[in-house]
Length: 261
Image 1 (cartoon, rainbow, N blue to C red):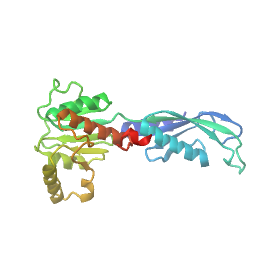
Image 2: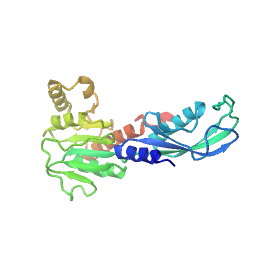
Image 3: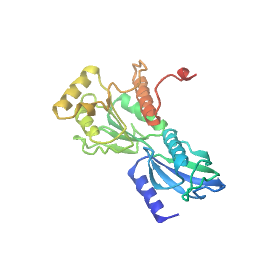
Image 4: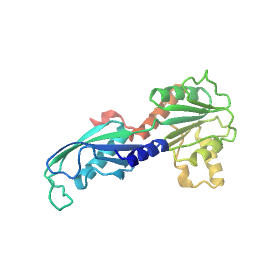
């Protein structure tokens, strides 16, 4: 395996983005790729390194890679390449199996604020394999034993680092929620949730518009945060928020499974 491959792999792992590696594991007949050939596919389905075949092989591997990045499962893709064309202009007339392995960084939940909703949210999100960061001046290890990071001296939210796998939930109880939302919008995380009343959320959005935040950007903020569970307790509200985060992470619809019978 080339040094370039391992270098690219390390670079992608360090960047915190999702990608997939496709490896040819079996061939029969005259096919254009050989066992051990690899390619790396990014989160948009683009091949960014290597090659495992062109034409129908490339498209099938692309689709399998996107599916694997959605559900986190490995796949073996069987390919009949009778229609594939070799570089010399002749049909392959063979078959190939490609193993697709997703690389999905563990998502991070950054909770900004405190209270019972924040505490339950941390517990539930940890259960579904989010790493937990709590940004709040009263956060303690006793309250958040599962947290990987506690940020307790960040009154201006300057220590909020929002990466491509950072989900943010703001539950500040009106104490700086507009500033933490603005900071969250500067990042490229997949989810920003604001726990607030409709009236309070409107005030936050009006402030951000006055601060020059584009209306399109504000559409990234989920407020009220969570799915429609009609929940009223902190536990029910936290569960609905975690449900919404998992739905976004996995590309789900949020509908009842009964609708898919």
